Image 1: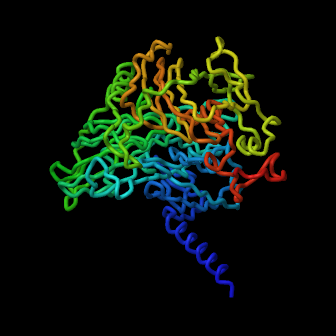
Image 2: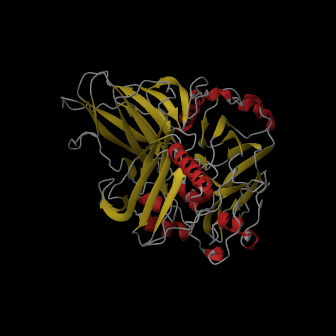
Image 3: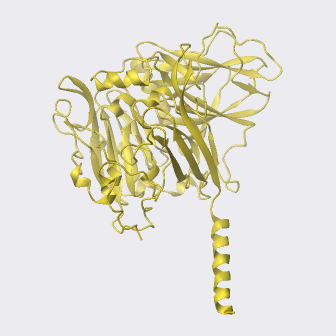
Length: 556
């Protein structure tokens, strides 16, 4: 008997046990994606369900947890899900955009595995293929702080996930046909709250939520619509804003909140009013035709009807834009609160870092050969048949796309002439960059960046110039992943490109995304090291020109 060999095996076994025990917890999900019939606006139509639900199942987890989701595509079209706001550190392989992943073909499945590394907050998932987002397949992601890290408010009595947004009765295939034909999808037909809509004076429905007098509740809101900003407010109750896209905020009370497309936030509401029914009101913002809907909150043990007198919406038009900008400016990062890590949020002094690159993006609406397109700096993105990230990894990207066809400054004729091609910006790893979004159009824009959060340091009317930096908030701007850009205004954000991968920067207005108002930022580690980015997972679906190529050597 070789005691040295046995002793060596015992040591290896002991180390393996330690590694397994030290790994962060796992949450396993099995999702079946199907069509079903629902009536979000009272009209029966085909929707996309996950496990027979819309909204889909809530992912309820804790910072650093591992999430494993086995998705079975029972639709008649290819399908992908993205995890809006989850940063996927070192792992753009499962980001779920057409530029990073091959779609899940009908009748097949794929297992997403990712970690909510160093994140807390409110996020959501949705489909990025075709116009599936218009039909559902959407749900909430709730990431809690670890037990030992204090949260700057008391634990609520309960939490409620609220998906809101505009809704179209046309159906996702009809909307896609409109866009493929070079037309706009037009105006929505209404607004929903968690897949339902109701109006004051309609027959009373069962309450959506129940309060117990004296207790405080957390509502997590996400606007997962296609194009419409909304405002929400609680009848008879103020709300306290405590979290915005993964950041704890200085806590202010509000009577109503604007929520732009793609944005998420958490508010606390205390049941401190006479027991009866009350309405949650959600209404459209900056639309020619106003839309609104209500849901009912009931105090336990009481069924007295809610008052038909609803809290008024904020002002609209130009005054409303100023109102919404001022509300944005009231959001301040809580510098002393911890988030996912025990150190205070304010220990990261972003305002003291030198900017190494400025990218100024101007959006435009254009027609090419009579067909509608949208662009950034004169480039309207199209997805090649093979995902950009896979081509880059396999070293064949030059067959389908070029880097930096877009300039860091908009061309002089940005609103006249555009190019239609894959739009990939070559980002330098660990550079601290500034992105300016300038909106010269007459409609509001919202932008999201995958893989990162950024500091939204300013929104102002007019056009941006370098001297505008003196107006930046360099102390306590909120770290977030979405920013609104109002008509005739600009917004500035800052971030460090410290997450290697291929990351989508997109308009959250989904017809604009579909018709080209997006780009990808390629961030490569020069060392090709596992310290900076994971190698291609063995389970990755391959397609297009890389389907039969030999696999490159993994990162070391």
